[in-house]
Length: 92
Image 1 (spheres, one colour):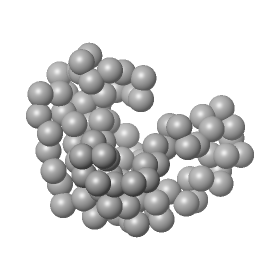
Image 2 (cartoon, rainbow, N blue to C red):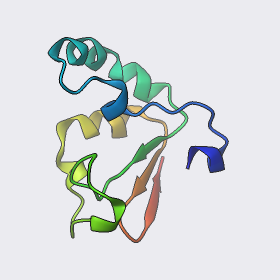
Image 3 (cartoon, rainbow, N blue to C red):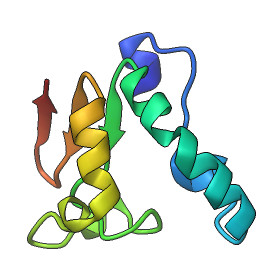
Image 4 (spheres, one colour):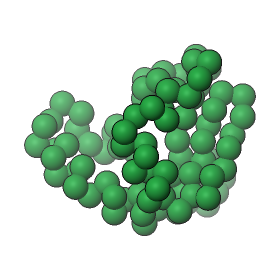
């Protein structure tokens, strides 16, 4: 997606924040608002229950939208590209 949009850098929270480190989460969670508000677009796997679920195994609803931190993404990011199973939704 980034290559198609001509975006050079990609930040993935589940890869850029050490998931097993409480200290890393404390530091990075303070910066996430800056990351989202300065991004070109936030790419969201809206139909996935977690970062390990394949786009092919989507649930019938959009569980990502039930997460508290997603509200921060949606409010701060200038644009969000939602992958929702059989459709892609652009929110700005």
